[in-house]
Image 1 (cartoon, one colour):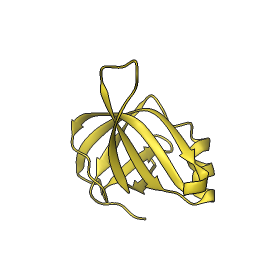
Image 2: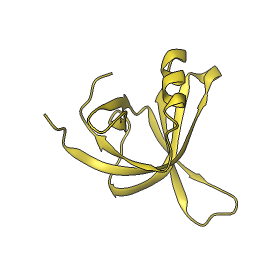
Image 3: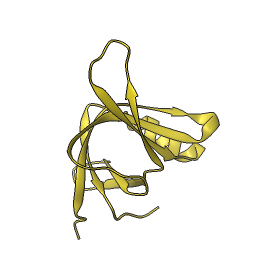
Image 4: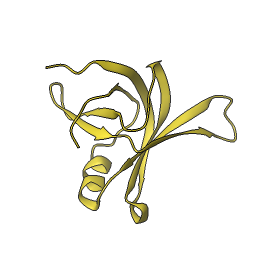
Length: 102
């Protein structure tokens, strides 16, 4: 069953801060909206997504950019962090949904 899509987030890049057990996705909302406690659906392949609960969403600015970006923060233990880093998430759109599994 497909989950209703609340928004599309165009990921520019991703990174982790392991000491905080957090994983970060930088990008822009290209459609809809995004809220904490919703899910970002990271594609593993053409038919399978990894739904990750959003802890918080922050606005960020880069010194040489006029655009304002969003930073999605998710909780991530060491095993999940290694998996997410290994996916090389960046330069791709992902769906935002209200429903998912932790």
